[in-house]
Image (cartoon, rainbow, N blue to C red):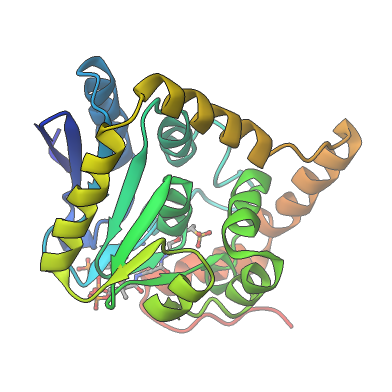
Length: 259
Ligand code: LCV
């Protein structure tokens, strides 16, 4: 497991993203290592997981690895893609997962952080939801994570502008549970919270976590409505803008989207 580092200390699993040269972009390789790490944590019966970047990181994660986005015409984020598997791994993990955030969080990495049970960050934390910047669609489960986390108006603003919100805004809107001044305090406080969780019943916590997961996505939807949402996404991943957005990122230039 090269792309993530894991340590277990006093029943706390610590997973550090380890792909600094690509700003912790979520490549398939990293995500498969990530899922493997959670399997180890589960076997070791850890009571809390802390998900972090290396100390001092300016970027917590740059999001989905854009080099791995498929050519137009194929769903870029389908049910069994590694990012989706990783999100469900976090959501279905039987103990709390705390995202400890230092630095900027982009696109799919926001989804990953938002799927964690709590977020604790420093003033360098920021969050951007980026599909419109690259000309890609977003999947219904991800959109629901953003609505649940940010509320509909902030979710719209973040999707439409693709601009980062800063740590204070994130705290104000309840995205960050806690905002602490610097990395030293971030580590100290996150471990303090983890220790508090460890005092409580792991069975009770795991059952309540699962209940919250189910209830949090309890909006009923007909099969026809679901197919319509899927169809809407296809319009984007079959489009000129999809090709242009990814091409522009690779060529390090501003994209020219269709009017
Ligand atoms: C591949 C990268 C990436 C990257 N992929 O360093 O949610 S969705 O729908 O939008 C979804 C599809 C998604 O999550 O898309 C990704 C969204 N992420 C972004 O828009 C952020 C893209 N990255 C950046 O804007 C910058 O890299 C930041 C601001 C994060 C860091 O800037 P910095 O100047 O520190 P570089 O840009 O120089 O990046 C270092 C290397 O990492 C690659 C990037 O291409 C560069 O590679 P080279 O050294 O080969 O030039 N890299 C960064 N992000 N998401 N590769």
